[in-house]
Length: 391
Ligand code: BGC
Image 1 (cartoon, helix red, strand yellow):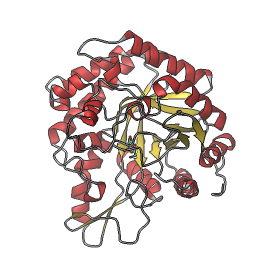
Image 2 (cartoon, rainbow, N blue to C red; image 1 turned 30 degrees about the vertical axis):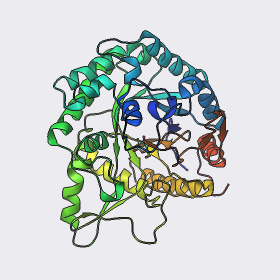
Image 3 (cartoon, rainbow, N blue to C red; image 1 turned 45 degrees about the horizontal axis):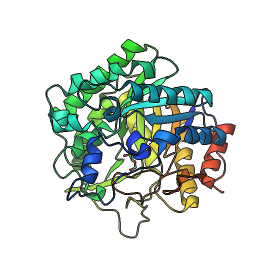
C-alpha cells in the first residue's frame, strides 16, 4: 500500500488513562468522591508513570515508529503557578526515551483531565482559563525543546465542550449535549494561545488538535436536523484548524440522526464493549468529511480502534479502516499518519472493562502482553503494506 514517506505508524495513549495515581487532577477527585457516578476509579491504571520504558520498548520492537502520549497538566502544575521541575524532567526523560528506542513522540497537552485547582476555579469557564493554559504550555519548554515534531494542544475539544455541558455523562447513543458558544470560543482561543506558546519555544514543532468525529448520517428527510446537530458539535472545531500545521482525526463509530436528533444503535447491530455500533467505515468517512472542511491542512489519524475482547474483531475492524484510509490517500487526501487507539488496555473513563489495547496489561502484576493484533499492525508499520485481515 502506498504510504507517503515519513508516514506516522503508531499508537496512542493519554496520561490519565495509563499513568496511575493522578491525584492532583479533577478526574481523580470525581472518581473518588462520595456518590461518584463512575463505576471504577483509575487507581494505578497501567502504572505507565513508572513503566513507560517497557511500553516504548514494546512498541518499537513491534515495529511502530511513532508514539502519541500525554503530559499531565495536573502533575506539572499541581497548585496554581507552582510548576514541578521533577514532573517536567520526568516527561523530558520520556521524550528522550522514545527517541532512544526509535519512536517519534507526539505530545498531547490536554486530554480531558485538568488540575483540580483549575476545575475548582471554574475550569474552562474561568475568566483567565486561556492565559492559564498558555502559561502551562510555555512552562513545558524543556519537554518540547528538542526532538518533538508534533504537539496536540487539546484532545477532542468538541467532547471537552460537550462534556462540560449539562447531561455530559449521558450514554453516546443519546448524542452529545450542545456545547455553549462561549465555551467553544474559549477552547479555540486556548488552542491558539497554547500553539503560539509552543512555537515561541520551538518554532519547528507542528501544532494541531484532534477532533472527535461523530460520522453523522442523516436518515432520509433528516438532512437539516443532522447538519444543525453536527455543526456546533464538530464542524466548528474542524474549521478552527484551518490555520494549523495539521489536524487530528479520531473516529470509532457513526451517529445516525433522525428528524428529532440522534438515534440509538440500530436493532440487531453488532456492538462493541463501549456499546457503540461496530462500524469500521467510520474512519474513511471521517477523513473525507474533515478534508472537505479543513482545506489543505495535513491530516493525521490520532485515534481509531475498537473495544473488544476478540482480537480477530480488532484486526477485521482495523483492516477495513485502513483500506478506507488507503482509498482516501489514493484519492489525493493529504494523510500523514495512523495512530491506533490504544497502545495499551487503559482506564476507559470510569471503567477498565472496555479494552481498546493492542497490548494487554495485567492489573495486578502490570505485566504487558502484546496481543496478536499488535504484531499484525506492527507488520504493517515495518513493511508499509496492509497485511490480509488474518492473524
Ligand atoms: C478519547 C480516549 C478514549 C477513546 C475511546 C476518545 O474519545 O480520546 O481517551 O479512551 O476515545 O473511548
